[in-house]
Length: 533
Ligand SMILES: Nc1ncnc2c1ncn2[C@@H]1O[C@H](COP(=O)(O)OP(=O)(O)OP(=O)(O)O)[C@@H](O)[C@H]1O
Image (tube, rainbow, N blue to C red; front, top):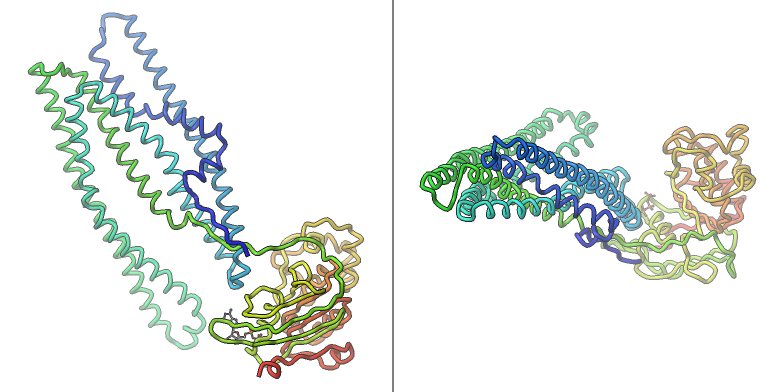
């Protein structure tokens, strides 16, 4: 077991991006940030132009076109590069997230693929929208704030400072409403998760709700929770509009007051203020505050992802080698003790199987048959004891574990058998013949297309395919968990005759089994109930 963790931070982002990409993002981030000051600078220049001088008008026109062109080309390239960077980072994060869940699923057998997929999509989307994008845009906003501040102060330091001070007042309403906004968001989010939980529960219990005739009561519960959720959402939005309204009122003061002060200074010839100064400051000062507002917004988004950016998992060591011959092919279970939760399922349990031995583990429901098989396989933690094969600790590569749900994926029999490893067609055909599937699947058995989750194969065919996978790899141990419980007697007997003849050790967990076939094949019967009491 190996504990691993990836913390998605600025350092991680920089490490995973190409240095050239980072350099270009930096350059275009700086040049594109002048978008904020360009309007103010160019419009503010107009009153200073000598409109009688044609040459200076042409020069002004060319300079303005080139400036806008530089800024917009930079902005375009910055946006394009940003998307490329996000693609790279998304691929990394989704890859890590999937691998983390894949590895951790060994300790969480109930983990469902749709849950992993949903989480992977929603978490990576959140990291993309609330971390990667804001992080890349944060730099650009910072540059906008710096360049606009420089232009404002250079235009006229005193009037510039008045403009900035008043502009920053526009942040007051949202700053003051921040705490209340957070409370309202939390309330809505709490109500929303309640609503989702109730919806899931109701849907899962739709048959019981109908059978017990309690539909009306549960629909009322649903409506109540839906109303609560929508009401909280309305309150959240209404509060947002209240803040917005206060901001508008502030804006009237903030926009007109510095213009009036500027005009008054111009009238009285104070500090060389002109109409040109007022124009430049009016159009530029807003970008300082706008950039600042964006900065704080990005920072809040970045902080909100702190929890989901830490991805940790436990890596279980797997070896992908084909089973190697061992000194003696004996499987020995020594003093095995297993607890599930606080409950001791069995204690000091020992078993010994020689090469090619077959054993059925039986006993009443809930006694711990599947637990024992999973503990032997190493799929669940054990309290004490050892499981050895050929004198060494049993490894994943030593055995094939087959349960009722055979893992089959959309693809050919060839792919499902070889699992994308290199095997010749002769080897694949030989394994299919051993389980009696070759003839059954027609002349082109290897090219037979299996549908998603093997929906076009019978239960028995799927079981035999799983056995063929193990035979192909010369596995010396087959661990089988209730594999025939969903098959009819004839199919179940057929599968049993096959597995009891395998040149391997077979341990099968079975509630019910055909005693005659078991006897004919010298299968040992191990009743767990008698061995745990
Ligand atoms: N995932 C789990 N987490 C906690 N306890 C579990 C879990 N699975 C099973 N158990 C407990 O372990 C006991 C043994 O379960 P197990 O599935 O091994 O029994 P079994 O003999 O295979 O039953 P059955 O024949 O009904 O499949 C159960 O009674 C249950 O209390």
